[in-house]
Image (cartoon, rainbow, N blue to C red; front, side):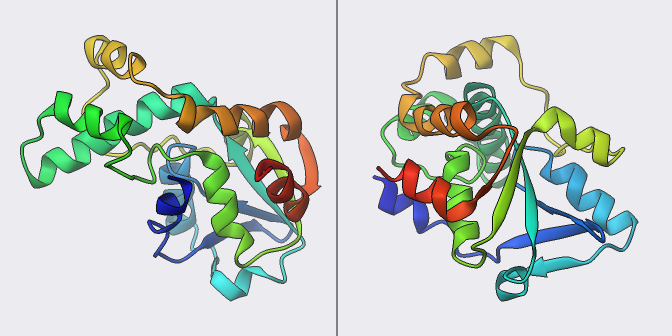
Length: 189
């Protein structure tokens, strides 16, 4: 199953330079829209792929895994709905059966695997709430608000394959500055 996840990372790996010493790796559903808009508004440098390798340390903002999963599945449904009318129950069933892969709800840990292709240094893992100490933006994707009924349905899905590895990441490495290689090696066990 996890090998299939890595196939969805065909896009560039990006890191935003907020200031001389602040580099941030934007992850979907972890303030990425706010970071991207702040970067656009302030004409900030966005490093891509091999340009990232010389960065000294990168901040990564993490979100509660279950909260992110619920929000990510909702976002994926709404984005797919823009293309074609989605059967929501079928979509959720396909998520549960790993027939649908999407960066909005895939484990945050896999985002670290993607970064590791280009960066081998230290990462500073922080709760997403700390992002707003760094930038003032509160931008969100232009999708309908998650309603309680849908949230409850998403919560009934078997989410552990999506969240357990991230709970391990958060428990062990939140609020630390650690070599990315150490984290990757530990979480692949």
